[in-house]
Length: 407
Image (cartoon, rainbow, N blue to C red; front, side):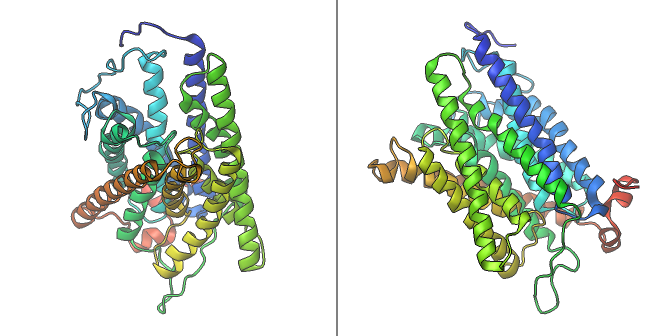
């Protein structure tokens, strides 16, 4: 354990409470993914969400934490296995910072699960989760949050639109591309066939849980609650986070109502998440009005992205992970450079900050997608990443786990 010169009890309790809220997002993701997919794969999906947090906890403690936070080297932190005693005096114990960062790491890995649902070998997914937690996420996290080259340039990602969500969404895209679509998803002529989720009630409950958990994800990233300045900052982030979520859902509802003549519950659920993902980078810097615009843009863009990936690219993403987390993570980071009250392009800040935001998100997406694609390609050519057709058709639960979620 590191030596902390000054520990603030209120700050510590706030960070630990926020970590609990972010941990509670794990069942939220599990419910969304399970509800939006078929019942025959539910146990497999729940198992993968447990694996993400279990593996993320151990691997991030073992090596990921030091890669991300040990030193201020440009590309990667100094590897120091099991060592968490290098952060210095930040007002909270090292272990509070470790657990707060651990739940973020697990979130990045969990995003990938949705894009690869219903056709991935469980053993292969465990390997993928290990590599995300130990290599992909910590390195790009070091660039932005660990004193690396992006942070030195002035790149701003308050709670992870880029570091967490765009990273996870980019890896999910690579996985979905190499896996290929589920059996029956597209006809011989290329027409998309809807494969409805088995329980929208579960999916909607998961979104409510995620919305609630995001009040730890974003405000918790203030990392301090003591004093009027921190109290004001946390309150502002609460409001901008909630506003973007609401406006993202409203935009998705109105757009689907206009395009498809009926407001789609599943797309409204993803619209709420799209707004949350989009506001996560700049929730501390934008005004409440700016957060409303960011939420609406992300909610509408998500609807278009889902249709684009499905109908144009023929990339099968069962829960919309690429559109929600990848596309809206990119948009949210870019719009931080536009709408930041202090330094944003629309507020007279010039092109510098906006350019840095664009550069940062480009590099994080390129790193995550490229490394994810290479890993998936190697695994596919060696041990194979997709289950056999019979397993996919009858369900992964029995074949991969020997049990079903519904008996």
